[in-house]
Length: 394
Image 1 (cartoon, one colour):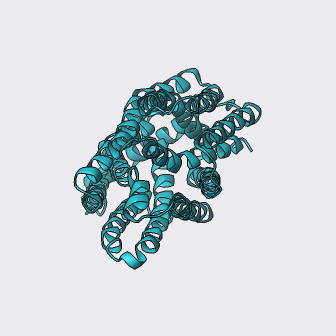
Image 2 (cartoon, rainbow, N blue to C red; image 1 turned 30 degrees about the vertical axis):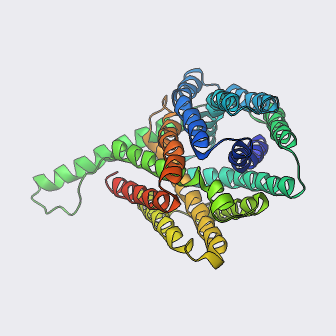
Image 3 (cartoon, rainbow, N blue to C red; image 1 turned 135 degrees about the vertical axis):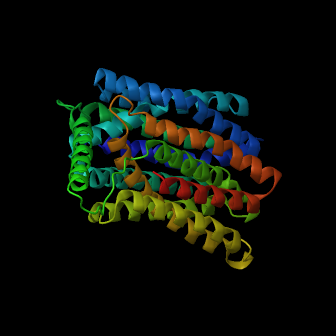
């Protein structure tokens, strides 16, 4: 039940994710303006994410930072209704993003501490399935608001109200764990297991036996680099994508929301698949395969958009598969990060995602405006392949 507030929070940002780029263009902004807003917000959110992750582990208090995130989002989205200046909206969005990321690290830690390592994948998948359902409903709200002609003020007030509801629900339901030890216990188990494996191999060597195994340490740097590259590719592709559907495929706003609803629906299916099955393959192998699959899908998008009669349908099918793949990727990388990243640095996962997202949020709109969307798809697909190669060494 403590996750319910996050459900309403994601409803608001699901609606905002498509509405805001379309709104910026509608009030006279450009693709570059969208890129500057998104990338600047993510750049400033990087130190903020690290700070919130550090301070929540330092104080061992998590609820208060979740409440700060939800309440500040409600306040800033209300202030959005008081201006139609692209510059002012960009400034407000940057400040809101710095406070908004306060909930990410505490949420990840709460799940890690409330459940054992064996249940992390299922627990993260359950959480993500719930909030992805909220995101999907938010997109449905966007579809209906654009279909029935709701103005921008009404849409922004709805987003603000949903965040206020998330704050009130979390105030009642979220509690801090009484004992905080699961992540440290997992780290100790890995260190002991590594030492034991070393002793076994040394014993075989001393006995003159042939070895059929070797010691391998996790390469945290390669894993972190893969996270950054995957995030870079995703934000490069998705930041200007609503404008592609709106301008290049000449789809109305309601149809753009439908495509993103389908993308979110694919994510929900992916999260439910992660809930209902055990991880039979090693997480790292699954992460590599999913990353490669996303890259292939982007290249397919280049081909499909040339088939003008069915471009929108084929592009929607690709986005469904992308949402499905991302759901599995996110669950496995988040679970693995809680194992690899030491306690006290819980915000590092979100920092790495923000680094890639910040660069991609500017790079995507810039490439789309200067070179066109085909080059955008080609570059984004290439970065996914590079991320796949990086994960091989993790």
